[in-house]
Length: 138
Image (cartoon, one colour):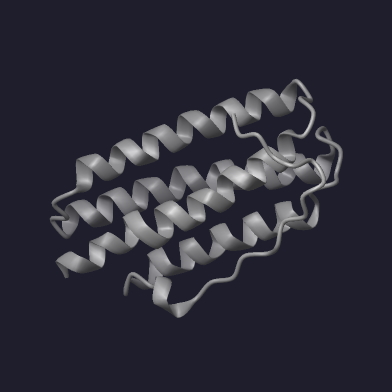
């Protein structure tokens, strides 16, 4: 997992128009990811087993399942040449997220901060790079 400063304070992330994939539903889904991440940031000090945190994680899991399916189907319809590589990134993310959920259920110390760090990195690396690569093939 990620080694982080336990006194770190995460800044909220914001959607920027240059992240747009020029597909309304995908853009709306990505904006929702930012909203979920920001709620985690708002509640980064909540107890690992809190109902509020559990609800946010549940929403995140539902989001990931729906978003990855839609995005992969969309890229397939658009004949995106890097679809299989992109699916592997999604699969790796899902496995890592499952590990975070397992650690949260064990109430591992600092796991919420580690999850926020992981999701923030995902927003930077995946949405801002891997997803935007699709625009090179429009």
